Image (cartoon, rainbow, N blue to C red):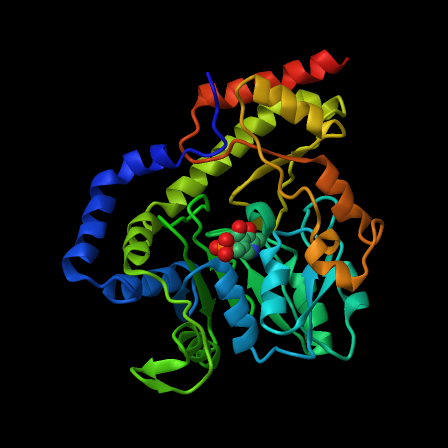
Length: 373
Ligand SMILES: Cc1ncc(COP(=O)(O)O)c(C=O)c1O
């Protein structure tokens, strides 16, 4: 038996008639860019996360770039971001014309180390972007405290955390703006590229809406220099169908995580594997189930031989990426992010995983541990 890392076909099979019908509606009306399906999805997603506004855009990266710009942050400004995230968090700050300033991550949560944010604040800092990495909410309370002391805007990167809750509220709607990715493998994924900005601030919503469509709300009248970052009709239609299943899929992910934890607990007790922890005040939605091991590369090879696909999120922290060489960072600057880059391994995780597949993954990890002894 092989176990894939994700299985998008299994999910499609489970909702095929509804998705096919939704796509057919777009074909029948030719509303290929924005249009009714996108508007309906925007309303439904805003309600789902508990935000007043949702603006659909062409990717999670576009969502971040537009949110940064719409919050009034640009050239000459600094934005604090975690060193341990997908590259796009920092990239979007740079393409918005501002400068990302990196902060190390917390050893337990892998999220931004909230107690280190304050030391990174300078007179030019305008915003901070906590990332809910792997689907686990960041320590927002602590980030909001520092942000309030220094007058910083908080923009959430919720690209991996659709439906996750922090102190009972869904993430994304808690900062001034929240950014989502609907890349196909995400907990809520389109059938192509997609993203959204959610906010309770009408001015931020208005600016994102303008910026995504050439600075224009009315055809051929351009109030701002913007972009072509519009969400496609087919993606809006697919997302509208899938949103109805998101909570059930997230519950399945949480059940699988609990099962992994049971099966792998002996290895954690033996000190050969570190398992992801849950915070008492947050609900993790396990976009990824990320374990840590000193022998990560060997473990990954062993699992591949046993037919278990895995991933590494991420092998190089953002401050050490060649694109940010001009920042002059060196190895050792953010030791925890660097340690995790050497140790993290993402196990198969998707709603349709079977008990047999979960057991197969655990067996393969166990046999790798035994073969090392
Ligand atoms: C944390 C994080 N931020 C931003 C993005 C960018 O989203 P997209 O790929 O839709 O541009 C991703 C996507 O992988 C992500 O994981």
